[in-house]
Amino acid sequence: AQSVAQPEDQVNVAEGNPLTVKCTYSVSGNPYLFWYVQYPNRGLQFLLKYITGDNLVKGSYGFEAEFNKSQTSFHLKKPSALVSDSALYFCAVRDRNSNSGYALNFGKGTSLLVTP
Amino acid sequence: EAEVAQSPRYKITEKSQAVAFWCDPISGHATLYWYRQILGQGPELLVQFQDESVVDDSQLPKDRFSAERLKGVDSTLKIQPAELGDSAMYLCASSLEVGTFWFFGPGTRLTVL
Image (cartoon, rainbow over the protein chains, first blue to last red):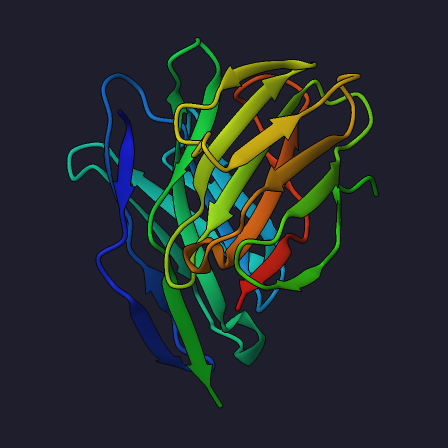
């Protein structure tokens, strides 16, 4: 099965500083990778995805992610963090399930705290 | 903007009681998913529908959980009887084209006492 790992439970950054939330993947073949954000007691909001093409993917709210095949990583980045970016971030990979459908497999999540 | 609807948003129940959650996907989305998210963990797939048919329910605890999507539109997830370990956020998602994009609803937060 395709999987992703998020090595950090929490990331702390000061407002205005760049942020990075890490994700590594384990897949066979070409990965379809996603980032989602979750605010307290809310559903998941899509940020960006990588399917093919340019290794730098730009998404919503100023976020971007860099696909690195040699390091099997897909880290989420933002040049200047905002307090409102504080939330739970999930990396996910598309996986084919037993009956030829597709589903998303998620990492355990990384809590981002941006301090004023 | 079209959204995935879920109700109720919050549910508190006692163990051994029955609970049901409802999901209405975005119109025209043939694929519907139910995920369970335990606090501090990532969402895990419970069941996937393509129209009214179950595509994958390998992670659904079938002794107590059931899911249906009778007309291929909205869906209901039921737990009977609920156990303490079922306390979690239950997320519904839908997809127009299989495997390309997932839209998530706001979720139902279940607390079992």
